[in-house]
Length: 543
Image 1 (tube, rainbow, N blue to C red):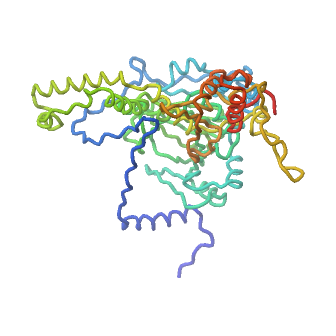
Image 2 (tube, one colour):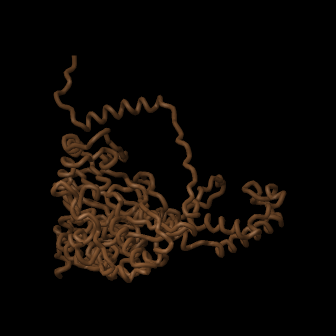
Image 3 (cartoon, rainbow, N blue to C red):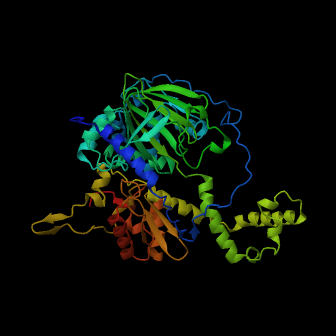
């Protein structure tokens, strides 16, 4: 009779459970989830995917260079800087930024610190969406304070970290990528057992648990005009956690501890330049030779655009901890057009009879894929008519309404603002309202016509209208967990809309409540109290 070991690691237990699950999965019938209904918001319909079967497709062309005429080469290493900015710690940077009056300026300064010494203007002109960038610092303490393995361990002990939701356990061995997530809470006992067995750990939303990461990202998102997210990766020595792949985001790899060997590859074809979705895992034979190969050390930064294939592995003598800061997911001209074109067609159908006229009775006999090789004059006439309608469609495009739809997505995606001590003291978050002496004390905002107010952040609110109802969408009640809450908004009375617009455009200046353009002083005060209650505005002095 065989004796069972007194202790079996979490990794070994997972392997047994995974094998049993695999056998059960083979017996289980495949279930197809029902299709989601098309949504329509503010008159802009969600674009419906094209279901037509493409029979003919041009062969893919290999991409030798991403920028025409400019060879994609390894970025030369930069020399370590000795000025004050290079030596400034993150905590000191954030403390300095708290004194900056304009949140957009904060974002610009923080981003410049992130990619120092490369000027941000040069970065967005020459590198952004075009090619990788390596910034070796020879300063292991540069990013100290952003995140650490000690913070990782504290979060596991103190917070409700769930496998598959907040934490992934992964491995990549002999060309095979596996995920080893058991069900339930990720406690240190099992997590560090997985790590000791050679598995990588990926924390999916560190901003939900780390106030510093939250503060960092909530500032940075205004630099991109797009949500800024992050994942933390902890990899044991001599291992690799992920297969080669590309992502649909702009990636900034910030090396925090240890070392990691990175290889970055050009997009394989023009179709994979700035892709809309992330790739599946690739085999080594599918990706060619790297255009950049480097060992990142603590304090270094590596940037690469979406579509650039990458893989990272640990050296035998060192673990690796890095955070990948990401942004610009689904933020292309095509994503905006996906909202604009259906809306434009809706307007055209309503206003122009030419779009409502019937198709030719016999168009199916000469149009379509099966007829595409026919030389038929009716095809030329049909395509000419279609081209004219497409060109005419631009005149019906409600561009501002479509932009507002994109803005609403951004406001839903964004983190809530992480307030500075001064902002907290002068906002609803720092209200002195409390329970005392058996009753509530200091109830009410005590705002009057002379109170000076401004938005809590430049991008925290947006006024939108569908032609009938005016809504104010805002981020201040968002969760630090992505999309945990529904998009926040409330209706603004027509007579108060100019007042809200005035406050938005007045930022970053404080303005008196009396100067808000409403019909009466009472309405001005009521509007200010409403916005204060929602955390959208703050006062110049604590109330």
